[in-house]
Image (cartoon, rainbow, N blue to C red; front, side, top):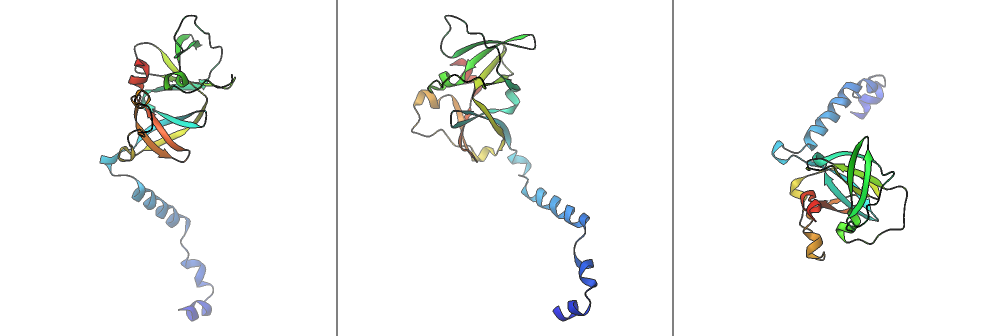
Length: 178
């Protein structure tokens, strides 16, 4: 066969797949990588608190924005960071660090507000930074590590491995009730 290719050098380029064939092969590969319909992935917004990554279900997310003009409310518990005006709506901002029992960081001006939906009152979480949006296969969700305190572990729906490490998947109904 090599002799045939050498004898007809002009025929070799026509044997290479064209752009349409390559695109079809890519699409076939994508289809093969998709999970079966009964194993739909769930989307989570990942965010950082210090070096640790956490996630909230995307369907409970309203929006993400830089946290500006946070107003502290005297006499509130440490889990309430304060109130913020988000386009004319007053949002109660929960301090995710305080709720999870993490140490308070040095003051930073670059925190983010993760505004939530699905609660009777407008709520949001104050987080350090945004990681990414992850599609998590439900079969890959594991229980929280046994090394976590029971009070902390109770706030999670589970954990999942992502490129940044172990991501704690928050159960927002439990977090808000904490």
